Image 1 (cartoon, rainbow, N blue to C red):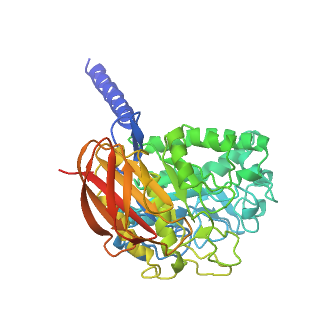
Image 2: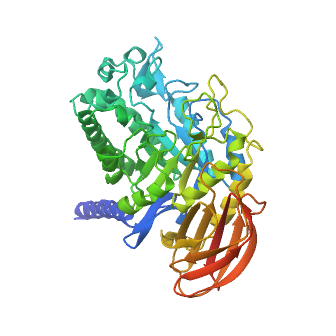
Image 3: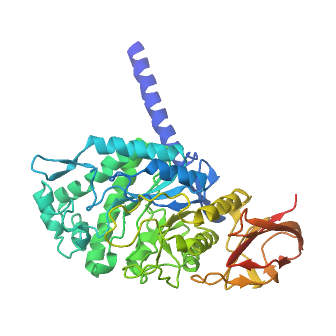
Length: 500
């Protein structure tokens, strides 16, 4: 009888803990990075259960290159920035490699260099301690194609796995994604071993969102090859979530796939609508494929997922750097891009994007020390970033701000509005790409979704030290409001809140 009692108690305990873990993952809010949404409002990214704005320069090579991530982290903290992009590994730079190396210098893609992973944990821990959100890029760009030639890990001559010959790297992009659909399951396990190792090493952190492949070059794939890609992603994302939740039953991973180099159409729509991709990620560096902030607003409405722009683009394209391939790129490296970077970030904030990547490295060729300049004082955008953070900290009703309201008349070529029933944000600026455009004092007439009543309007000049310049009071009746604006240059924002 006693033995039966103990068996019963143990069985009930196992059932309880299993049921509890399942319930926790479905209902209880997790700390760290998460998405909060319901049928009544747009998706909102949360960090420790508070609405999040994460923007900042990427630390692209920090996990596999000697990189002063602590100095850059402190600089970001000091200037209100809290987002970085990082590659897990890369073909061309490997001071540190996640894979173990054999005596003949080749890599075993299913075994690990413990020193890399220890260093990886130390870096991610430091970033989490400083509340820096990490956009972690997993498979490198080109997905096995020509970006990986020469010294790529997946080239057969560089690893111990004869199965990788199937990938056909010579000017091929699709081969990497065809292993599952073509029944090359041993190759598939070799390719994806890095995913399960990465999850085991990173699931403990609450500040990471995952990007399965940076620039997968889908534009270079034929329709049947894109179908192979979909089958690879369907199988892999299911395994990804299952593996992650074995380690973190209290939390679901935030997962997306970069759709740069992905033409609008069936495959991009399939990615955005996929249940296991809960983020829409879009590179902004390539003219044929970029999505503007206004276009992203419509995508958020359709797919009801956060939209995350990566790499700066200020359409129409700005050419600050001669003789480079990516003529539309804006980068923190170029100090003259200050005003364009600021306008880029503000437009995406008004498009309700909460994870905003700023391109950092030099795009000039033959620069061996890409990110080793001192960030402090390098670009005056760092001062504009403090104003952005101060503004964000003053928002009261962000989860309910929606794409409602309009500017009936007012200065600027770009007008963007977010409004709830008790708060509104109105952004006014010159055209993207324009600089030093002065707007004279004028009247701003608005139609908003605010309740009737008395409101306070804070007027901000976004490159002005301290940001806020004037505070006015206004009454709203049937959503109509008017304000007298001071003169400003390039861009400004009005923050309207219900008077207490």
